[in-house]
Image 1 (cartoon, rainbow, N blue to C red):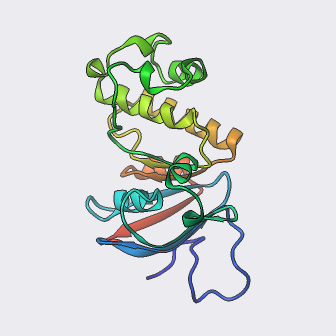
Image 2 (image 1 turned 180 degrees about the vertical axis):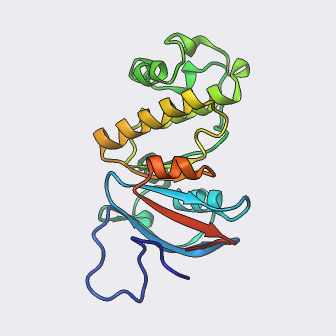
Length: 214
């Protein structure tokens, strides 16, 4: 495997990297081994053909599927903390978020905290009263993102968060994520099929092909 810029390898000489998130030899069926390091405030764009393993990578980092290798956040290894705590700090935002209650507001611990992002992403401040059933694909995508942001994770794992959105709304989403990244110092791993978007949002890029990174 040819390492991407910022990747880490067992063959590297010198001290251990000091990046905020370190992924080393991450594997699961259809993926890996994948290694990279991410600093605070960095955005890594992940690209590759459909079925290459991009979503598998995000889910493995979040520890949602059985996987091998290691993940370290700050000085804490993933296995040293309870899984719910890891997933709060390393938040996976799927293309199609899950919903478990009837109304939008029931999915948010504090709707007032979510409102600035809700309005910034073109939704009305009172959409907490809406039923989930009435939401469009794009509305679900935006609200799923906001749901992750209100928990202030250290790392955001974004799986094509603008795939169902028009140009103006895509720009709004990119702006909100950029603001969160600056203010929180969060690291972002952003899967996108859009090369122009990768150039706009990312500080580095990683390509996945057949489960391997380059």
